[in-house]
Length: 333
Image (cartoon, rainbow, N blue to C red):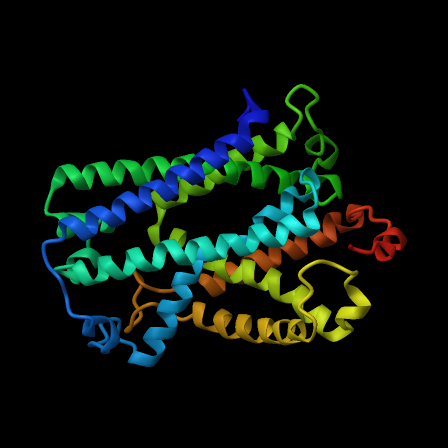
């Protein structure tokens, strides 16, 4: 990333091809080598609730956890300034992310669920993915090869994540939102990208990951909270647009939803409110020290940190420098 930044787009494309190719190979291996086949009723018929919750609340809690896989779909927005025709390509990228994720994961998960022999062993395993593939293929060699492929795909995705985190931190520093903004808003003339904020994001994420070694409960609570925090940032602009009116706020743009847009603008804050309440519930009953949900605590702590930054350095925040007159006068053809 630092040695050849101009090759990052090509590397990301290769990583995407590598990931999709691996999924197709794994899907074929699971179909060809599975040792057992479960009836479809194990998915369609409710089973005994093992979390202590009734079936209804347990289903809703399971849905909120699965939302983590589709979080941060707005990440591409943070590199909008480096894209051509962002008003068209950004919606395309965000929608394709959701579409590719659904079309690739749903068939694989369906086949894997119908091929499992012991669900409890997967739940209590230290490596659930490895246990799942081993039950399906009954081969340690194939399981190891699959896990190696998945590991390489996950680590290769870090490049795009660091690029996004670095651009996001740089934009915030440029607008005066970070401590020492004048230092972190620097763009390297040699590398042609914000090296300092990218290193800052790398150090922060690496340090953040060390929390897993201290407390898995706290780490899992913060990871789960990411779903809530991101959705809150999505819901606030939706609510403002719904209240002020789409024609009064949004300029002419491609992919205009028209009246359907109001339905999305009003529905999003309602759904986020429901999800926010559900995410704060404990995953199991009865509640103990080992399974307590610290999401509300983390949410309040984060809110206090944000308020602290606002009152101590909020006066330095300038916001993006936008020529609104030009912005409103642009007509998309």
